[in-house]
Image (cartoon, rainbow, N blue to C red; front, side):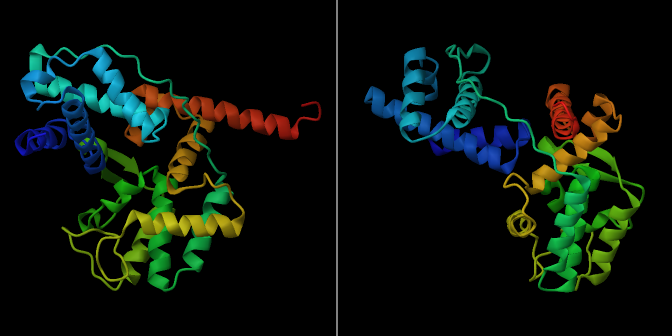
Amino acid sequence: MTPALSERWRQHLALDRRRSVHTVRAYVATAERLIAFLEQHRGEGVSPATLAHIDQAELRAFLASRRTDGIGNLSAARELSAVRGFLRFVGGDDARVPLLKGPRVKRGLPRPISPDEAVALAQDIAETAREGWIGARDWAVLLLLYGAGLRIGEAMGLHGDILPLGDTLRVTGKRGKTRIVPLLPQVRAAIDAYVDACPYPPARDQPLFRGARGGPLSPALIRRAVQGARGRLGLSDRTTPHALRHSFATHLLGRGADLRSLQELLGHASLSSTQVYTQVDAAHLLDIYRNAHPRA
């Protein structure tokens, strides 16, 4: 793929489609793999004009070659989605994307953890931190995930301009979409305690959560901290930072929140993304029934 086409595709994804940095990187890589495959398969260079003539057999052969690289159904489905988007981008209004059924992907249900487990996880991480202010920071981050339903990337994206805190917080989520989430008093207190303890004064244009040396806090550090804590507490391997967000949604639904309100709180683009939590709640109730009912 020519550098010019690659850059156009990258800018379309980032600016027009407002995809995340990770999605842009993955979709550009997929387009480059497709072009490299077609050039080898056809034995000639591939231009934007010739991409309009890709047929179903070639697309199927490309996916088969990716299978030999060891990717599973989920990755293959994502690869096919990226290819379709790229071909529509290159072909414009006249694009003819070959019809090809993607692999069946079994969608697993999120595994929520109990409120006590969520608090115990955050407390363990805070208490085992190497410095007091780092413990306060991690406590505040995890309470944002569980108490406000933020994605970890959304928490890392907060800047000092959110201070002073109020009853709500404006969050920028996927594709630059903003939403308003309520802040529990406990979450506000945790953030304020972290700000007071942090050796790096908050700045409006700088990340709120800082690493040990003052740079932006990496999500990987929070993930590693959660991994260590769940081992110490004997929690499931599926207890991740994102599981705290799932728990937030499941517990709200279990206490009577309606799907539309939950959709807004989570920042889901479509209601179908939120509806999965109805299955989670039903599964949770079934677990309780099986464990508690004398005739279960």
